[in-house]
Amino acid sequence: MPLPFLTADRTFDAVPDTALPYDDRERWRRPYRPGPWRVGGAALWLLLASFVLFAAVALALTGSLSSAGAVLGIALLIIAAALRILRVGVWVSAHGVRQVGLLHTRTVPWQRIVSVRTAQQPVRWLGLPRTVQGQALTLVRKDRSAEDIVPLLTTHGMDFVGRSSAFDLAADAVEAWASEYGRG
Image 1 (cartoon, rainbow, N blue to C red):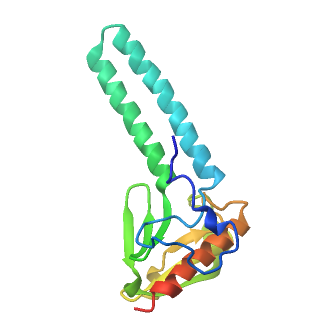
Image 2: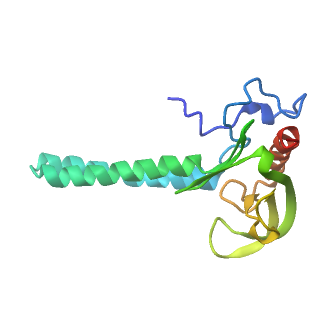
Image 3: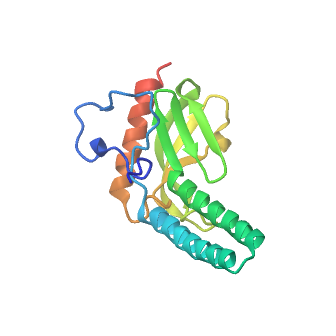
């Protein structure tokens, strides 16, 4: 079963003829592939879900249907969380840039963006409180002050740890989208 949200479009692997090599620019797309930490974490959650589903089947076979239903609900929540982990990241389209988090999604139209730039700064390692020196792709909005700048992508995020060239390609792709549509 193909999972289109798991892979990025292959046109960013090769050197594109144009900055935005897409015919359908209205569709939301992630300009990079999810990293091994993100995919591995989702796989571990799915492994946990399989054990919980096995427990639900065992409970159903022993005759405790209400308990089996509750455990099945927990398993479905774990599966939904694992799929959401795979969707987390930055998505772009002609409408703007979308930052998908585990529990929230923020969409900023290109007209409200002043600039998108890469900066050397302390960044969080794998989303944990520990910070290390790295690069971050930041988004400067018209309606926010300079202190409210939140990084879109970092070199030490779950998608780019140990993949600095992938971070450079993703940052260049988002900057190309911003330069194309941010003229508004």
